[in-house]
Image 1 (cartoon, rainbow, N blue to C red):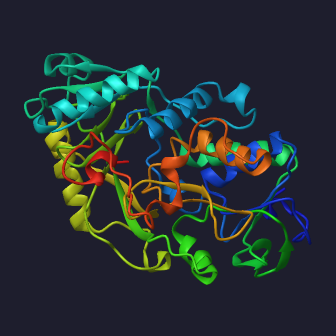
Image 2: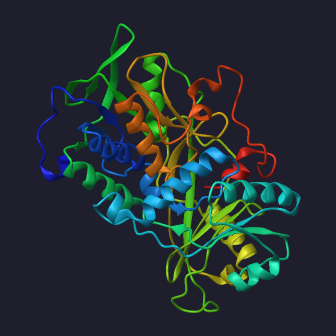
Image 3: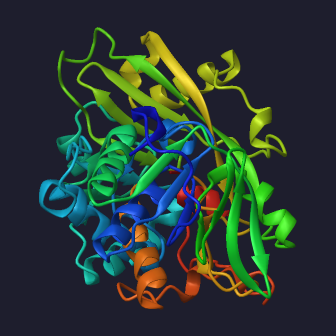
Length: 407
């Protein structure tokens, strides 16, 4: 049980400790319970307090590499059959359809990526501007030559997804302790021995560090530098304007032309985030949850460039979250060589909500069975930077990985 529900005090020992009650840590906790391991999850604040709770929560399979596509496709199956697969809560998955728009210069890369995704079993297709207009009549198409369309993708509720994993994990014996900050990972003889917290120490042979933007505060004292840095991710909510029909959700859109991601979070409101290419700080505590006026203006302009009717829309709210980015923009999911029993899920650039069901399964396999079985995780290894082999997608969009990521 969680401390929010009057749980027991900090236990003296645990089979495994997960640091971070975001969607990836909780997915792993649930999957570990399915393998007979009852982990303790430590959270410095509350469930989904970090990047998970602030996620735009897109659920789509379109990536510019086969590995993350595989993660997304497996995760999609879990989102679609949540009651059978997880058995607690409801992720609020809405399959409204998804469009991936790229600049004309990236048309060939888009064709290659759609072919790759179809080979892996993805429900995706290429569509022309005329077909885009049929799929989504209110969208502007004169600046694109082709797009990818996933008719069964959409978005979910990021908090509800985390809560569902938490409830399912608790039902099977996991302990989720909120308001307890992990201050140090303890080691001896090259092995994990425990976790020091503000409430005492837990002895354990296994630690999964899924601490989001706070990962460096725990990795640093262990002498581990993965080149991670925290970044802001802002979103704004706009009320559907008079020109749009009432109670009609448009398609989810990732738009490389305008470096934006767009989702119809309610029948009358739309969320948009715009990628701003700067490093915003050095510590996650430096960031505020509010959104600046200049960003609101930039978001409205980007939204109106794709959906012209939103030029005269009312801003109804917004927020800022903080995610952790790796040097190459791709996630690090690994069993670290420095200490036996130390696992990490970090550096995901804010994209791992949609892949969290699969990531949790993989980490549970690694911890319980000694190796991941769902798929080969070599590309996600932490050592790729020290090896001088950062992850670069063969058919990324634009000139930087961020233009391919766009949440």
